[in-house]
Length: 227
Image (cartoon, rainbow, N blue to C red; front, side, top):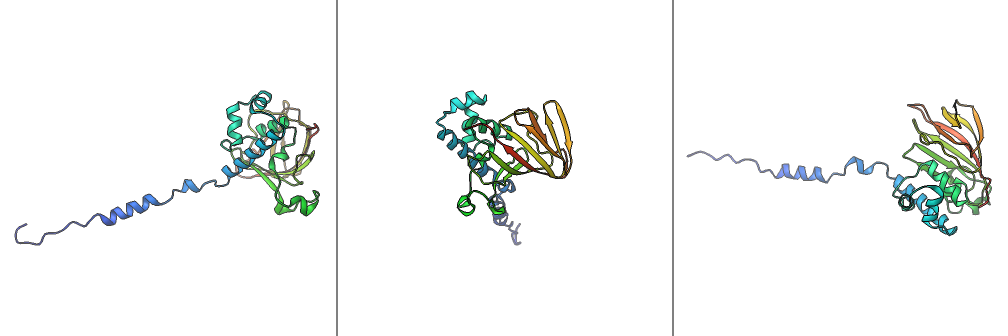
C-alpha cells in the first residue's frame, strides 16, 4: 500500500516452537508395561542357565519339546514371552519343577534356612501376555519337589486353547473369583471355596471366564521325577 503502514504478518516462530515441543513429548505408549520385558529377560536367562547346567544344547531341547531352535533362542534372550504351557514343558525337559524358573532372591535362604518365605521375599512370575501371574510362596530352589503358589488370573486370563501335560501332581483351592478347569475331556466351573486335585500328566488347561473380576487360586505342585 502506498503512503500507509505495512502490516507485518506474525512470525511463525511461536507456532514452530510449539510444534517442536509437541514432537519432543514422549508418547504414552512408550511407558506402557515397563516391567514385562525385564521379566521375560530374567526368565530367559534362568532357562539358559539351567540348560547349560544340564549340558544340553538348544538342538537337544528342541528335539525333546517340539519347539523350534529359533523360538527357544528368543525365549532365552528375553525376546519372546513364553506361555505357562511352554514353561511347564521346558521345566520337564530340564528335570525341575516350574518353581525353579523363578530363581531366588538374595538372602532368602540365609534369612529363613530354606523354611520360611516372607511376603516381601516372594519370587513372582508374570505371564503378562496370557493374564496369569504366579507368586512362589515356598522357598525357591531347583531341588524342591513340593511347591506352593498364589496364582492370579486376570479377567479372561488363560493357559491357551491347547491342553498340556507335565510331570507331577497338582491341587488347589479357589480363594477368590471363579475358574474354569479342564482335565482330559471334562470341564468344571469352580467358585470360591471349591478345590481340585489331579495328576499333571493328564491333559489340562484352566482360565478365568469372568470379564471384570480376577481369580485367585492357592496352587500346589508336586514334581515326582528326578533331575
